[in-house]
Length: 124
Image (cartoon, rainbow, N blue to C red; front, side, top):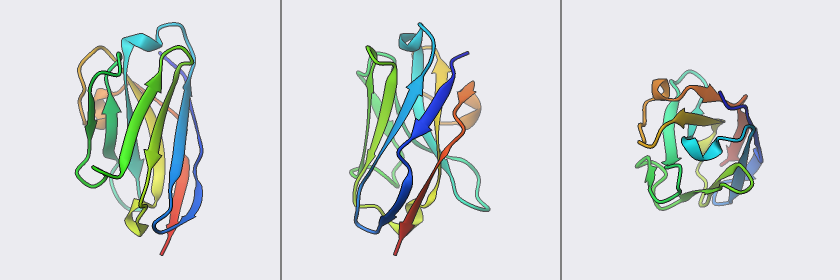
């Protein structure tokens, strides 16, 4: 298991940007697919973006495609999510997640390690 700690959430106006970071513990970071999910009040947790262990492949939810960029630094055991042109509907708690292996899945159940979440609030 890998321990994950998110940071970078906050309050931002619609149209603004945020950069979320996730720091992972452990020496096997390169064995994990990393993902970002979000959960709005009263809604189920949904996939946002994921990146393979090498960083060579990325997948985005349609709702954020073109506005989000996921990246990772395997030397620093970190993964980031840059979100631009934020919309009110992006308001949610954002979670970093890790999946051991090399294939991306978008179901939350496919990820075995989770951070505590960071709140992103977009004001309209």
